[in-house]
Amino acid sequence: MLAAFERLRTLAEKAGFNPDQPRIPANQFGGGRWADTGGGDGVIPLLPDLLSIFPEAIEGIATDFDRTTIGESPAIPIERPSNPAKLTEVTRNSARWLQQAKTSGASTQARGFIGKLMGTDWLRGYLPRITSYLDEPKTLQELEAGVSSPRAGFDVHHRAERTAALVDGYPRALVNGRANLVLIPTLRHWEITGWYMTRNESYLGLTPREYLRGKNWEERLRIGNQAMKLHGVLKP
Image (cartoon, rainbow, N blue to C red):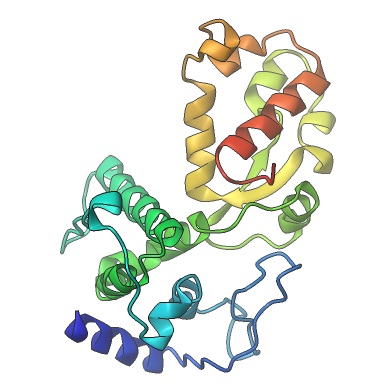
């Protein structure tokens, strides 16, 4: 663990990590993250971004946690998986495990796992997906405002499903209109897409997509908002 943290500290120094760097205000989109200070391309550094989620890890404070609650951290292949499905599985499992660690307050264990992630060369390009998954739920206004500032690890999402709405005859101007667009974490986006295709007892055993056939626009938006709440994107 100590060796992993030392490597993590070294990587932070190379990345220009400064614990005194200002953060984005909590009431703004991306609140709590380190703000960009103008050095480079304007992208928020990934290492501080991950560490900011676990402040105890930055300070080196040990925290108690129940290992049986969150389980061991996921295995990270040394080489980049050639199978896209396996690659997605690695990033998804990493994000979900860190979410559990965050919820459980397992900062000590998370610290070692973050070091492992940062030490895996092929995975660094996929860290935005993992980091964005840990975002706190936002208001609808914040999610809508995010569309104007797209960034790695996030997707533009249609609140009312795009393809299904077009098939039902809704005009493209409405379907692709700004009022129907939000910016959400990529992995959460994929989870929502899977939810739409999964049979659900709440919809009489139909999938949400099947249930929405022929429904009006307001119902599509209602279900779309419900999906974002269920998947930790939209505040309740």
